[in-house]
Image (tube, rainbow, N blue to C red; front, side, top):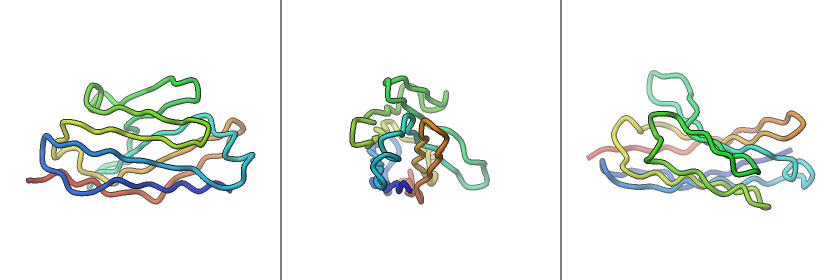
Length: 119
């Protein structure tokens, strides 16, 4: 199996920054087969949505609402991914989930980390 451990959430003022990290661990061949990692979020009263994702070829995809403010990087050999979040606003308040997808279909989620943007 594959486990995803997220960290970096917390309380930040509007306009501030946070960096989230997610590390994959578990059975070696399963972790090695991860080819896409990403971040999703669920805001109060809303469905879970894609924030950003990155492939092992460094191809990235961002939600329109975060483009230019958030940067996803990582997914190196140790399958760790980071989400640098700048210019945060209250609409970014959500539980952020890490997701990892394997080449042959495995799909894994972290437990989530809370980000609160408030003055």
